[in-house]
Amino acid sequence: MSDTDHGTVPGAPGRDDFDPLSPEVLADPHAMYRDLRARCPVAHSRSFGGFWALTRYEDVEWAVTNPQLFTSRFGIVVPRNPASGRRPPLHHDPPEHTTYRRAMNPVFRKDRLARLEPVMAATVAELVADAVLAGRACGFDDLASPLAARTLSALLNVPAELSADVSRHAAAFERAQFAFDAAQVEEENRVLYDLARRIVIERRRRPLDPAEDLVSALFDLEVGGERIDDEVVAGSLRQVLVAGHGAPALVMANGLVHLARDRALQDRLRADVSLVPAAVEELLRLHTPNQGFARTVVAEVEVGGETLAPGELVTVSYTAANRDPAVFDDPDELRLGRGGHHLAFGHGTHVCPGSHPGRRQMQLLIERVLAATSSFELTGDLEWAPFPVHGPTRAPLALHTAS
Image 1: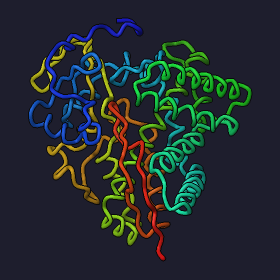
Image 2 (image 1 turned 90 degrees about the vertical axis):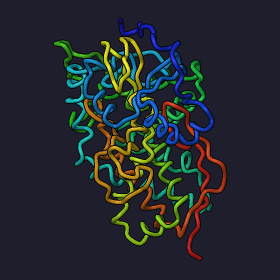
Image 3 (image 1 turned 135 degrees about the vertical axis):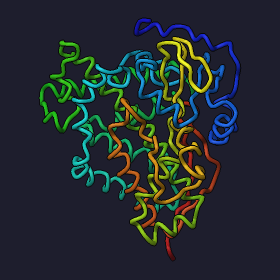
Image 4 (image 1 turned 180 degrees about the vertical axis):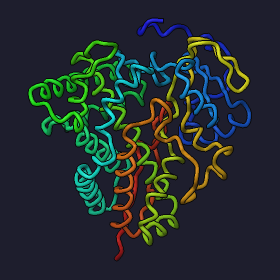
């Protein structure tokens, strides 16, 4: 198969074990995954042209550590992104992927948080103050999404004059994906590419320390003995601009929803803020947004008693794996200090490089909301992002302060 020919999907006419777009699954995919893990842990759906879903932790972990059997070359989500382009590093397997990540990883190192912390803290303070003053907020639109966008802009050194445009169009791209509007996805993808190219041109004029800047780190990178060109650099930046916003925003919004529904947990965390990092780890596990992270089968392989054929699409559902009772006792419960390694940031070759800022921005948001309120609660219906992600895109909250 070529990079543009994704091949056929031999299983498409096959059985239909689940519907990822049913209203029940949209609001609560966990009941579906509970059923699938018990009934057919390697399940097939006819949706989106047909794909398999791995729902057990063991199978997900195995698949993502065997790129010779499950490749990322033909896309990494189901349904396939209608926007054209193959972008590093996510659309590459080792050794190419390793080369890209080796250049990019220093930019995401933990000690850079010391410099990002003031930006994240100031953003959280501003967003929460506005929400408390109004007495209400949407957990996604007013809190989680703008926080994720501003954190990402700071992390990537997006020029100030482009930051608002990048945030707006990344959000518009995601909304178009949620609506399965292929034409609008393509249009927003084009705009994001243009913005990424402008950033690359600016960085060529004024390069930064490669250890502090993703674009500068990629300028001198050689893959397969050849230096990558600026269009590839722009493609990599475009990928991070989207990947670094959508999932973090959804999981932070879902974390706020969880707390809004659990007054006892709110009070416990207010009384002891040192427990917030442990709560964040459990919220990440419980509300992992990536249902449809995908691979394409390279060679015939058996998983969980099912034989998967070359060219078939397979989702490695981190959302499902993180509630597998074979790994996590009482997996639907939030337990502070729970052991075990959750897969909220992925696993193996494609483990998310942004786990450090991802965790910290969520901690800061929860700490500030708790400190600024005596309680907060849901005040209306939730709206949910559809497969291949999960999380609330509308989360109306009422925020109360002590009288």
